[in-house]
Image (cartoon, rainbow, N blue to C red; front, top):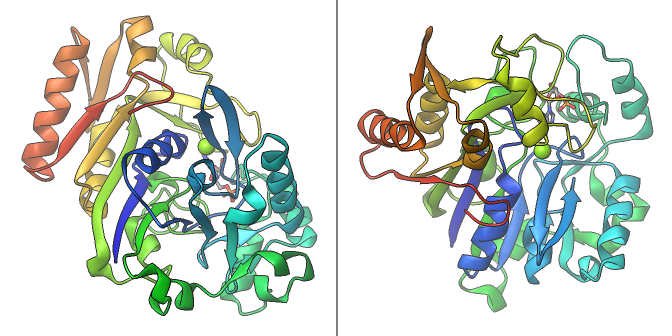
Length: 335
Ligand code: IMP
Ligand code: MG
């Protein structure tokens, strides 16, 4: 069994959907598995020129690959069924390809009502936190007990470990949210309620030794949505927000913007053991011709795209892993 993992090194919305989609095209996966989060996520994917936003459903559906919502996830059944319907209407055979692990948990309407009252964290109000609280408090409801989800259930242990027809299992793990929102490593309490690191993928039922590539996804600048103050003082951020369409794909909220924080990026890359790192949205900084990042309290300003690329690549090689492969992407559809 081999598994590649896509993790976000910042605060979500770095373009994991795009990377996962591109990896499905490059590799022959037997399964794509979402390993954390719920419909708080919003993955924007351009498939054959058309724009899709998925919340629960992994991107394997676009390539005819079995797509599983793993036991680390929480699911709101109505939202899930609507998503299946919307994909089917656009000609994606989601009904045949999407499965839910029997031991994933349900987001109830009560969880949603409770989450709507949140003012402190600035959640997506999708019921995520209350659903995980009830899961860990041993009061939750597993997918196997929801009548609406019966047609989609899968026993993940049998599927991955006892299925003779899939001797060579090859999995792409698609993560949600990001390192800065991780319940343990993020800026608590301004975090989500799940784990957003590579460890979270392993919790979904595969041996640690099956992990091959860990793709860390970042943006060349940072964004965050939620209640804390995050945006830096630079006037160019307004322009970046418009050009980069930095508005939440789940809630439509404007994302706060700041320059890349290299210390956090390095920490996320180290803890996840990323051997590939992608910086997305180079085209946006290209358009405003501004290249800055923070290292500790110092703000560095670079003369050109080339200068910042060399700085980032060499720092990651020196301080994270000398074998690391670094990519800079300026395209919505490809790495
Ligand atoms: P929750 O996950 O809805 O409980 O929200 C907790 C925090 O995580 C809030 O700051 C949300 O805006 C943020 N968050 C949750 N999901 C995402 C995401 O997919 N992208 C970016 N931020 C997210
Ligand atoms: Mg998103």
